[in-house]
Structures are given as C-alpha cells and as structure tokens.
Amino acid sequence: MRIGKLPARKARILAVRYLGAGTVTLLFLFPVYWLFMISFKTPDEIYHVPPLWIPGQIQFSNYYVLFKDGDVLAILNSLIVAGVSSGIAIVLGTLCAYSLARFGTGGENLAMWIISQRMIPPIAVVFPIFLIYVYLGLVDGYFGLILLYTAFNLPYVIWMMRGYIVDVPLELEESALVDGLNRWEVIWKVVFPMVRPGLMATSVFTFVFAWNDFLFALVLTRTEVITFPVMLTHYFGGQSNFWAKIAAMSVLGTLPIFVAVSVMQRYLVRGISLGAVKG
Amino acid sequence: MTLSASLNAAEQRRPSRFGRMLEDRLPYLIVAPAILILLLVGLFPLIYSLIVSFQRITMTENDTSFVGLLNYAELFRDTRLWASLGHTAIITAIALPLELLVGFLMAQLFIDRMPGRQIFVALLVLPTVISPIVAGATWRLMFDVRFGPIGQILSFIAGEPVRILWTVNPTYVYPAIIICEVWQWSPFMFLLLLAALSNVDQSQLEAAEIDGASYLRVLRAIVLPAIAPVIAVACLIRGLDLVRIFDIIWALTEGGPGSMTETISLYTYVQGFSQFETSYTAAISFLVIALLTLLTTLVLKRMELAR
Image 1 (cartoon, rainbow over the protein chains, first blue to last red):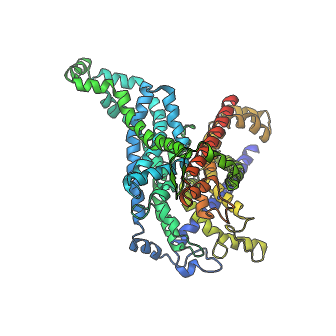
Image 2: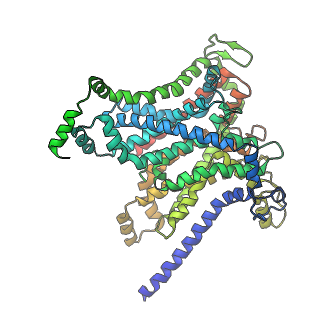
Image 3: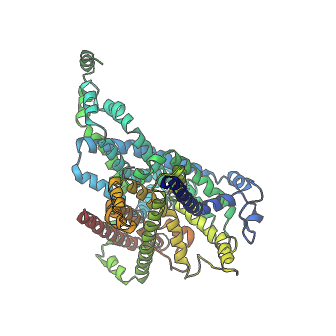
C-alpha cells in the first residue's frame, strides 16, 4: 500500500515545489517584464491611469527614436569601452596570473596586494583620478575610460585566472618543456587550451563589470563617449521622466549582458564569488 | 612524438641568446604590465589624494601649503558626513540579512532536483547581472504613484486608492531602496547558497533523516556549519558593496528627499563634484578607506577564528 501511495505523495510535493518556484520566479521577473513591456507601449498607454499591464500592440517607435536621435551611440560606446578594456585586462591579467601561479613571483604579498586593490572603494579614487585626468586631458575620451576599466578589472582577472592555472597539472607543462617548447609556447599551446572555459567566464564578468559601471563613467564622460548607464540617467528629470526612452534604452543595454550570462551560466557561481565557491 | 624526434626538435629550437634572456626574465616580464597599470591607476591616485588631504585646495583656492590634520579634524564636526554614514549603516544592516534570508529560502526551494530547474535558475539570476542603474530605473517605474503597478496592486488589496510617494515620502523612501536592493541581490545570495547547499554531505543528511531528526535540528547541526564559509564570503562581498552603495540610490532618489538617503558615497561625490572641496573630499576618502579596511579585517579575523 505504501508503494502505491508514495508516487502520489511525491507528485504532490513536486507540484507544490513547482508552484513555489513559479511564484518566486514571477515575483522576481515582474519588474523586468514591466520595463520590457513599457518599451513597447505608446505614450498614451504609458501615461494611462490605472496602468495597463499589457500593451495594446507591439510597436517599436520608442526604439526608433533612440536610433534616430543617435542615443544608441551610448550602447556602441559601452561596447567599445567594455570590450577593449576586458580584452586588455584578460591578456595582461592572465600572463600575470601565470607568473604568480607557476613561479610564485612576489610571493603571497604581491597576490594579497593585488586582491586588496579590488577592495578599494571606487568613490575614494574617482576624485583624484578625475583631477589627474583633467590635467592629462583624458576626460571624455576612450583611452581614459579603457585604461581605468582595465585597471579596475585586472585584480579580478589575476585572482580568478591564478585559481584556474593552479588547477592545470604541472606534469603537462613539464613534458611540453622536455619536448622542446619554450615557455611562451607552453603558455599558448598547453595552458591556454586547458583554462579556456575559465578564461571565457572571466571575460564575461570583466565585460559585465565594465558595462555596468556608473560612477567612473558619470565622472569621466561628458558628451563624446557617454556610456549607456550615464545616458540612461539623462532621461530622468525633475517631475517628468522620459519613460519610453528609459525603458527602451534599458532593454537595449541589458540585452548584451543577458546573452553573455546565458551562455556562461555554468560558470556563474565561481565567477561572482571571486572563486571562493567552486561552481 | 617519439623521444628521438622530440630531442631532435629540441636541438633545432635551441633559443638564441636574446630568446634565453627573455625566458630567464619571463616571470617578471609578464607580471610587469599588469602591475604597472595597477600602480598607475590604483596606487598613484591614492598617494596623490593623501598629499592633497593635508593641503587646503578648494574650488576657489589653490593653496598647496600643508595644513596638517586640519581637514581630518573637520570630519568630526561635519554632521552631514556622520548622517550619511548612518544612512549607509541602516541600509547595510537591513538589506544584508534580508538578502541572505531570501537567498537562503530560494536556495531551499530549488535544492532538490526537479525538471527545468536550470531554466528557473537562469531566469532568477537576471536581476543580479543587470546594471544597478537599470534596476533603480525599473523600480522607479514600479513605484510611480500614478503610472506604476505597485500603487495599483496596493489599492486593489486595500479596496481604496492608496497613494504613496515611495521615492519622496520620508517614511517610505528607505523601504523603497531596500526593496530594490533586496530584489537585485537576493538572487546573488541564492546562487552562492545553492552551490554551497548542493555540496553538503548527503550521507550525513540521510543519516539524520533515519534518526528522525527535525528539520530545524538538521539545519543547525549539519547544514549551517557546512555552508558557513560560503555565507561568510557572500556577506563579505555584499557587505563591501552595500557600504559603497551609489548607483541604485542615484537612480531611485538621488539622495533625497533633502539628504535623507544620502549615503557616504553620494556625500563624497557631492563634496567632490558639486562643492569642489578637493582637499576635504580627499580626507573623506581616507576615512572611508580606513573604515572599510577595519571592517574587512575584523570580518576576516572572525572567519579565521571560526575555521
């Protein structure tokens, strides 16, 4: 009799869990849905009281305006700045991490100093950096932002990649050296393929960090290389907010992140916990 | 590759002197660029800032003579500064445990395997990875008194029109910030705790179940000790982020009404970029760094003691 009852009980528990899972997911995704939905509404629908939960029809005029006015250039700027700075941080950071992992360069002290660089609150350095940038004429240019984001991401890359490189079996590298490869070739042909998944995940996170940064971009951009989060805050104004623009811009600015993170889902945990939890 | 072939290859590829030198210095050569950038963009501004904090530079004056600890003494008289530290402490003290609790409950819900779990997890992670500015903007839309759904839902529940100015009313502005913050970062806690919970020793759990131990007892005796290190790391990461909270508040309230929700990061920003109190801003920066360092060291010490 128990055997007959058990599946029914299990099915009930599973149903309850699905109900809970569905409710939680709905709750957390509702704001995202709201934003997404507003980006398709007409002005009449946006300013309708009481608020409408479903737009009358799907129309893209809110997006069209962003393209027509050239506001999407902010997205392009973000892509350039986040993309290039991540690329540089990944290359330089991985090389540095290799040295720390394999030769113990600088000992524990250097490793600790590097990670402590990440603990420095941005607000504490943004003002002196601004003053220095003004002096050097780097404000509102690609170079300044890219340099800054590279520096900002380097400790993260070094820390993560050191963890991945330590996991590569030393024998593999040694046998490659015996086979006559030099160090550069060992790094490129032996270590690189082994850490590629970790490298991809780390790249995604450095990209996301640079993409989402607001404070540095707010201070160091004016008109030329405005990035997407700064652009978004320009639509807020006193009593009336340009909600159509806010919503459409937010969706455009979230799309790249969403794609990148979906692809890298497997590595999320290790990536966001600074490797403290092996996911 | 056979042994003789590889020896042959090694013979042919004997590096030039220059190549050998490159290889000998390699450990330092490949560390150098990264460290150089970190020194340039990380350390140099800090040193510059430290010097400035002992001077008296404002928007109108460019007085580079040293005034000792004058700016630091000023910190103690600055009531708005201590108020902003208080605001930061309130937000951190409420949001952090809430995020941990919500994240833990979510992890409990998803810990057992169920078909489609990956899809739920992928969707739930979304709030954490979007830009905090987008999160703040989204909740500003949600909270809007006329066109937002929250007022509508509350009115429906109450059966009468509820008009709450979430981002302006002093009573509701903190709940608004904390709701937004908890919404964005509970999934982060969820993700870490889910990973930690799935690493808990299953045989121990089964043994406890056979012994008929209650859920709470299993939680206290087995589960919590096992995931404690992850909880500590998660709280450290989130705690540091919360202390420097800036973006969400900028998007939601801009520190208002008045300076009611002004956090230490916002206050520092105002001093630097609206008041242009260069030297004083530098002094505040070092106060922030000192506080954060103290906090981190204390937490890390406790973590080590617990281990």
